[in-house]
Image (cartoon, rainbow, N blue to C red; front, side, top):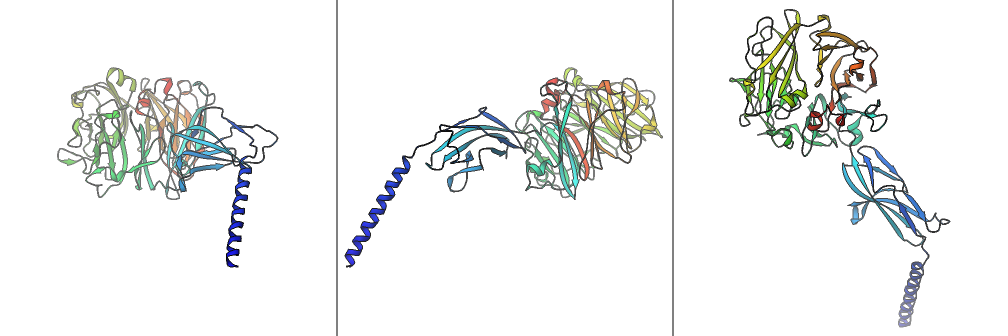
Length: 530
């Protein structure tokens, strides 16, 4: 009896197997409603931080039967669990949030449920960044560092004569990287530019977590504390950073300066050279710098700094890498009358100094300087020119300064000890803010004029201009950011505001961000305008 039961069970199993096999055969031969997938272009463009939404054209051989299908999108290059391709989203519409900048291949899969037949359609996505050129703003909100970005675009794409429209990204970093934090206690923002490899980056200097960030993707590249030979200084509290073509310097809260030399300038990859972990010295004494004076657009092999304690201007030279930068006195000169001696500022209180006229530096090897100072309760403006700066063999101290002019500052009531200055780099105009008023000074005419009045109580923390220098961005500590029109035809007008936004928290610093050193150097060309 037992044998009969076993035999019966085996026969039943064979019957079931055959039935399944026959069903599978019938399933394979079900009619298929063929699908055709068409894309508008071979490559779609996605913007970092924005969700690309796109639906291809899908047609069916039998248009009367289109309900029995399921759809999903997958990344052809990324494998998920169990070796299967990473699914981006389900449905006919693609919803793609670009995680990185670059090219990616994805596909839509259309599966007929009844037959199991899958049709695939592939397309390439080029993920790019909107954030390499525009107004970058560093804020503090609820104790945390935040980044805002204002994107200028032409109202008529491709027409550089059409007005700008501005798109704000109020909390850009959190949008791009919601699970990451920038740090806390923001102090300053500073960009560095190159012409190879990573061409744009920026530093956020802060009490906790000072770091360098990719200027395209905004990903953190490395912490500042990792960039010192022999380890980070024990008292590192950075408050300013300056990166020109051939010289980079970091200022600490005690006004000591740490040096590194990107010896080949904009042609050297970032992070090739590290900071020395000991502060710079001059004549056996630690250097104490009040403020940096960046050279023009990275052409020169030297830059300048003002040593308030030593009452002198110093040239910081890139030609001596092994000792952490050579420091040279400014060229000596003897002039009659009331001039500011750059080697001995004596009882003068230097308020501001800057280089300008970028085009002349590139074509004629000239550098122009403007310096505003106070002495005995009176304000003065001094201008001069210098030669050279492009040849490493020519020391800055051997480059004569000439064409000096020194005049009492017109309308001295416009200035105070707390005035903020900003010198345009391609035009001979100096903008400055005292209280809630914005003024401009004409180098050639020697006149100063009230230009724009901000809301009462506003404190200007930073100013910066766009590439063609037709717009001036003004950041206020109370969170307000304003763009005013400073084109030649509007300089005599009063109603010049183009854009205004109130940002959360406190604004700490702001710069107009460039995509590369070559773009900065070529800002006078229309092709580089925003």
